[in-house]
Length: 216
Image (cartoon, rainbow, N blue to C red):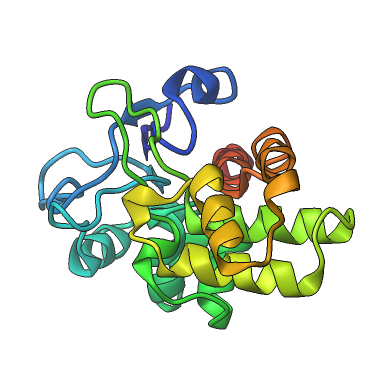
């Protein structure tokens, strides 16, 4: 039986992931977690979904490359996995999902596009990732809930915010201050965003699980 290690918990809970695939689920990956040594047992497949970013050392490129050279299949998407896959797909790392494609194609570049704050014990996200805000604004634009100028300004506002402060409530409030959202519709617009959020990180995390299932 193949040994599968998957780093997640923020974009996709372990409980939900386990209903789809039996694997060794671990907290968001950090520096030196992927430590493949000669003569030591190694996993057959590593899935990278979530990882730590700014406050702690992120997983290094070299350790992923070392795993690939040791014959480990590494699949990434959704968050840190999408970022690293866009940087290391030429070395053989497999990237999946829309966020990976955005990084790969240069649509987005900054780490903070996928960064969130989260509860240290439950791993519950406490802020909204910028990639989700992007996708949700596009969805609401297609539904004519907002117009192109509102989409552009609200996205600019979200990009300018420090990642732990991002929420639909905060973005819309700043939209009111900027004059692109009417006070009379602000609560309705917040409800639209919250109740119809395009959770792109979760969608792409599910694609990582599906890709690993296909590899098996």
